[in-house]
Structures are given as C-alpha cells and as structure tokens.
Image 1 (cartoon, rainbow, N blue to C red):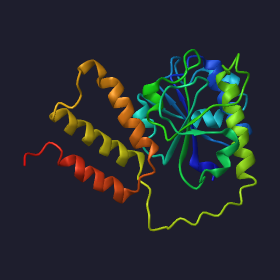
Image 2 (image 1 turned 60 degrees about the vertical axis):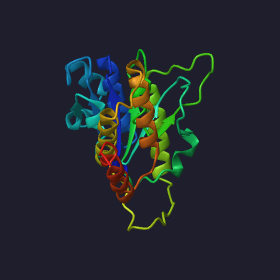
Image 3 (image 1 turned 90 degrees about the vertical axis):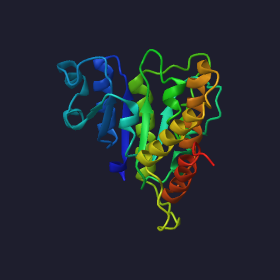
Image 4 (image 1 turned 180 degrees about the horizontal axis):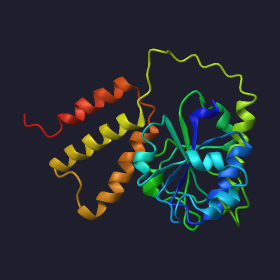
Length: 236
C-alpha cells in the first residue's frame, strides 16, 4: 500500500529542502515524489547531496508544470497547512489518518516554504491536515512537516488491520473525471453569465472546486452530474 501514496511538493524554493524531503520519504518507505514548478533546477547537485542516499527517490520523481496535472490520477488529495482558512473545508487530524483507505491512491500536498498553499491550491483537496504545534509558532520547515506525516503513515501501514467492506461494484471517480465534470460545469455557467460581478469570479471558482473535491463521488454520480451540467445552457 506504500505504492499508493505520493507526496507532492508544490513550488518548493530551496534545493536543500527538496533533498531533505526525499531523505525523509525513504526513511519511511515512501518512494513516490512529485514536484510542481520547482524554483531551483531539478534535479541538481545540492538536492542529491542533501538527499543522503535517497537518490532513487529523486531519480524517479515526476515534475509537473501545474498542480491540476499532478493530481489527476489520485483518489484523494490531502493538503497540509499551518494557517487557519476561512473556508468550508473538510479537516482531518493526523491521529485520524488511520481512517483513510490506503488501498486508494492518496496524495499529500505540501506548499512552498515561504507562503504555504493558497486557498486556490487547497480548493483541489478532499481534506486539509494541520499538524498540531505551538499556536504561537505554527510554521514548520517543509521537510519537518513532511517527515511527521511520513512517519505516521509508516506506523499506520505497518499496523493497519482495517477491512473495507464497501461494494466493489462502486467505482470512485478519478480526479481526471472530476476535473472534466468541474470544467464542464464552469463552461456552462459562463455561457449563462453566472459569474457576476467579474471580480468575484476567482473566489466563486475556488468555492465550486472545494465543493466538487470534498465530495466522494462515484463514476456513476460524476456522469449524472456531467449530464446535468451539459444541459445547463441549452434552450428549452
């Protein structure tokens, strides 16, 4: 089940942190690393040096130019954040990660060192994870936050005896299918001039994505909603 887990570093800024993250992943048997729009050239000598033996993680890492492409083949995306978000988000505690179905493809998303993830980037998530820390000093180094999550997953998967009884006939919608459905909805809403006033459109799109990505939709449910959206702008 370790092969179902991917860690994504979104717009990492420092080579040392990328290398340290790869090392932390290998410490806890997590090998799939994806990087979105890194600031330093990837890979480079400093990344390899600070990975201290995790060269294989670096070598197999995938690089993307957009977050949307990086998450397409996942079942769940869990974003990490140190800040409170004034959004209707599903939160998950690190102590509750054992409730996840690790037979599914799960992504843990980490933001850039200086600013963390934006609300727009978090809107692609199923859950938001905040690591408990000193409320007066919540900010964690990128690799430190990652290693806490990696260690918890390692502990869970080495002791996980959960049996999932959900019907095998129900297939969860992929991120690609949800993206297609969401994009269709947005296009149809644009045709009927739904996004008014224009300056509020970015926030409205964030909220729409949050709704779609929080829902555990099946393939059938996604097809039904796509059919509904396809008829939004049709004349009666």
